[in-house]
Length: 255
Image (cartoon, rainbow, N blue to C red; front, side):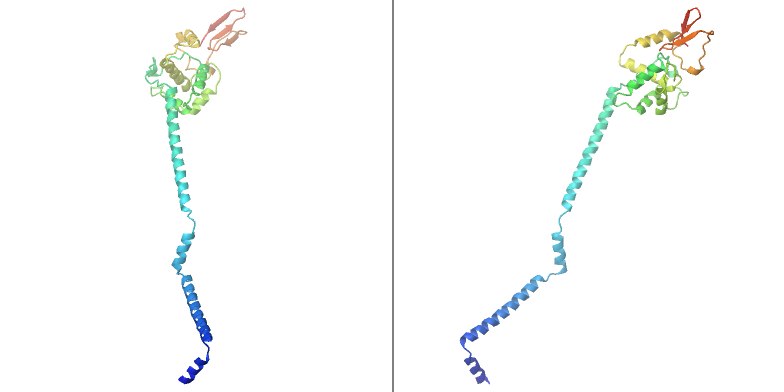
């Protein structure tokens, strides 16, 4: 048998043997390469997960920057709000002097003589509330501070202030706590600022000095003035009345 095999091999030419060997080598090499490719392509589930995580876009970094930016913006806004609030308080203090050190005669008993009409005080209130930093709430607190006896009002509200401001007439609202307190407050403010008395104020003192000041006890609806039939009556801005008689004679006064 061995001799036969040798004879067969000897019958094959060298070129044929080289071609067969080369074919077998290529076949063996190709399988090895395919095996390596399969091995390299086969990946574990963990590897795939890591690849997915690695491929996922990094959205956290921009989000973090946005949060930091919004946080810093919010902080800046808070600082700006606090700063503006402090400036408003400071401007209010500068615009409105402290009058707590000013004393008026009769204020311990809530009996300060009043020498201005209701309309005069209303005009002062309107101008005062236009000052920067002044609010109705703060003004009401300043008004409340003008009362010192237990019989005085427990508080003065913005609705009371609005009610008084909504009236018209020299004596409309004369019994209101807002009227008396506002007069006291503005009189202290005048003294604090070193301002002289106005002409209207001097005229009011001239007219009402003998009565101890403007009437703040009797409402305008309950005032009584007796006149003869056919006589005329008129008032000026100070509340001074003039009665015009039949013969043209006039009578003036306040009440």
